[in-house]
Image 1 (spheres, chains in turn cyan, purple, brown, green):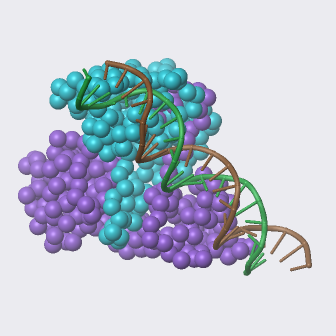
Image 2: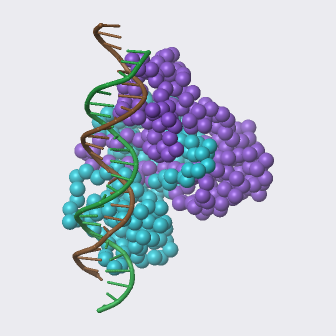
Image 3: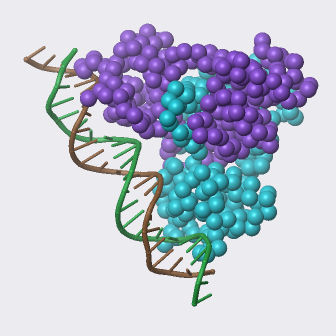
Length: 218
Length: 218
DNA sequence: TAGATTGTTAATCGATTAACAATC
DNA sequence: TAGATTGTTAATCGATTAACAATC
């Protein structure tokens, strides 16, 4: 019965943001409740799996009725930790960095780009939106002062490992790496790699094989 | 024995680009061969799994020796289909679109951004790198004429489904969706979603839980 | 030959799904 | 009460890993 477990499968955690995403849409549409069947249809996940996933954290539904949309949103936000604000440090003020800094989807989930760094003197002192681009030299100081726990690496590949090292040393606990480099991080730091090209490559496989139906992404 | 199978697990396909990535680094370093043990260390994958993965496509190694780096690169490229050139259509010439269009990691794997579209009259006719930004109205015509099979959606969320529909109708077979919207695509079209915020959200989970070691991403 | 390392089988492990009693 | 839908068990399915004979 609804006891919170210690170890939760990674797959479960990866699906929660997808559920949240769909739930937020339902909330916008003014739907008060949702069944696992409907939620599964929208998120393209088996309904049984949704129910199973949720039981890892408790029991949030009502038999015969379904799930209260707002309550489930709150619960998932609480589980993920997106029920409070998180400051982000963005390293690299190039095209990608700018795109991330300006992306307004972040604020909806409590993410605030709190500092942007670059090592290019031509960029330092400039602005991205209403943030000043700071000198890489100040990285450790600013991150510690602001208590930033999340770092985004959007620099050229050759600088990636060094940036990762410095972010981790400065106390950042979660790293999002947008370079193709397999950076090493110390224990206790969570690394997530997002290389658009690697994603293109694996998708490419299905291009030459007509029979295969698209395996759906998270 | 080394017979090519019909169905290959998705996980296998997702790991191939990671192997390729490491192999290319090894090649740059001038290493002629690599063992599954070393490859596994670099790609953070169990060596047995690498060998198992590869047997889905044949047997490419030499017992006692390991894998010839160049040969394995060729093989994986052939499997993925990245041994020839692929033209990309990029829809959305905003920050993200610009970042993708200018990303030089694409060409290394044979990807060429062949056309950029936007619906904003202020952007149409402008340039991103050496590409002219085209009017969305010309999307179908240009894609058909150029035989483009891959589309990248980098538009505001509200336009995502419409863009996906039009790309698919124009004959695009692989879609990379950078919006948080769960777009629907017809059978035979492979969809890959990459929402940076969803990735941040799931990574966030590990931020509040000190014990957990980072589960490695592809 | 001895040492290394693959290809492949078999064992393990974990995740997904179907089924259904509980209950709204 | 009848219908709907959850929470949860048990069955299935598939993926990972260990082990080892084959072989370079």
